[in-house]
Image (cartoon, rainbow, N blue to C red):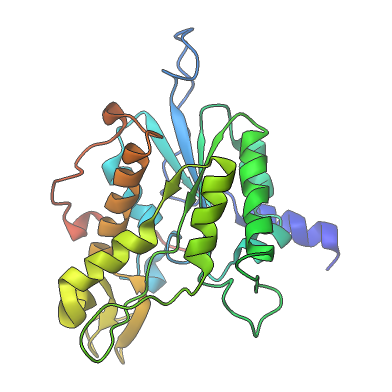
Length: 276
């Protein structure tokens, strides 16, 4: 397949998924972007991505983010399983985002899980060099279209030491994101720190309910069970999405009128998985 055709296929695959909130029609108020409907675009990996019925109950946090946003904000989730900051760009997946994004919109960027995979040159980046270089392309692309980029550190995996303490798993990548955000004046939501603290509060057993841990026979999609310490069940996706919404509010990227339910229980049953 030619390079141009691969990019076309990738761009089509990266279009907003079924079930994601579409961009609301522009409000003809004459008051500019401050009052017009806006869209939050997500560029990321499987921890944020839309999941479909064959993968249920696996859930990306991007699926739950609309629960915490008021209706004038839409979510266009372009996150894709298995992508790194590099492969997402190389496949042309940023292109449809930049074609659609408008002044006043937001671009949430969260990578790192797959950037770590040194055995895979198509995805691997080094935290203090190529990882930062690739992230800057998202930042400059959004800013060049009048939109606001937001950097997110990687959500932490479920990992505990022998003493039951939650431990980090992303090496220098979160620190590199923090430094990049500070250096270039980009809002930062430190999901890694917040999620690590959450898993610590829940402990080794309590945290299993937030991840895609399944007993044999519990789900027809995983008849032999599942022991997944990276991807979420609905409860985990909801709590990570809540963390993202709170972070956007704290960074003044969103206003109080933009968010809702930040302290309310959101039933896991509200998550649905469309047919692929």
